[in-house]
Amino acid sequence: MKKLIDLNRWAAEKLLTLKEAPLFFIRLVLAYGFMNPALMKIKNINDIAEWFSGMDIPFPLINAYLAAYTELVGFIFLALGFATRIITVPLLFVMLVAIKTVHWENGFEAGNNGYEIPLYYILMLFTLLVYGPGKWSLDYLISKKAA
Image 1: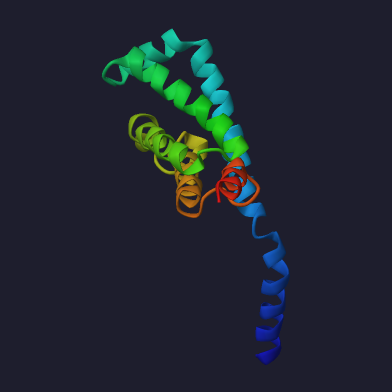
Image 2 (image 1 turned 180 degrees about the vertical axis):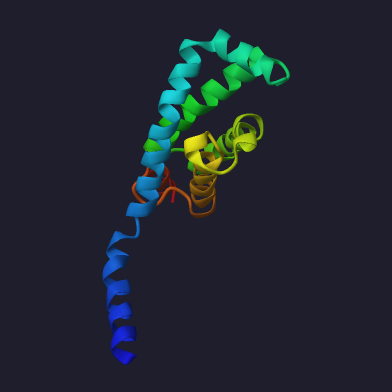
């Protein structure tokens, strides 16, 4: 048992050198995940507004623009690690609305257009909200210069 504990301690010490990587990769995965939906919405904004209207989303054109540009700004800010904690809040809201309006009725499974993927996005966004973007970010560079 002692050998297992020692091995665990040794691994934990070695892995500390990689502690910035998960936040960086979470940001990049989320940024990529928001990029295509944002561009698709912007290219077809009227179709998106019509779709929103069919789901009884109020002010469908305004909400189509809000969703599209929140995702676009989210893509840029997450990729750069800029204003990370701020942008996570509207992105969390977009994901919650997506779950309620599109995915909930389909259950959990992603293969059935369920809420599995938006839920993963919510968990990753919440992680960034709590922990911030990490040292590999503009937020970190800006905070160092301001100090």
